[in-house]
Length: 63
Image 1 (tube, rainbow, N blue to C red):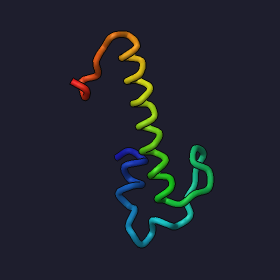
Image 2: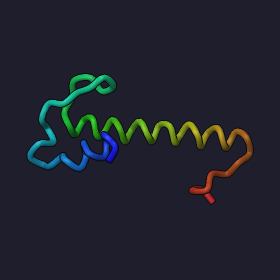
Image 3: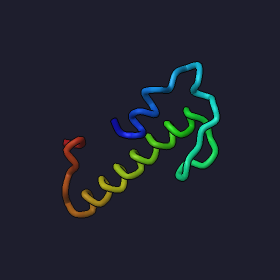
Image 4: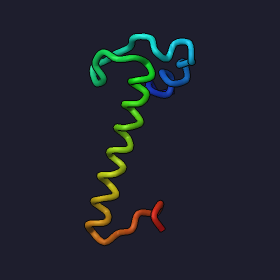
């Protein structure tokens, strides 16, 4: 299992606000790092969609 999948699988309501951190997210909570990961993936998706549209391609999710 990949690191982020394992990290999210181990998160519970009881430990979501525990301190956590790493090279990328800095000091934060478990919930904060999970939120950062979702935001980061969404940001990349938005960049890909913009690139596709600028080149005349309609992304599959928009068809």
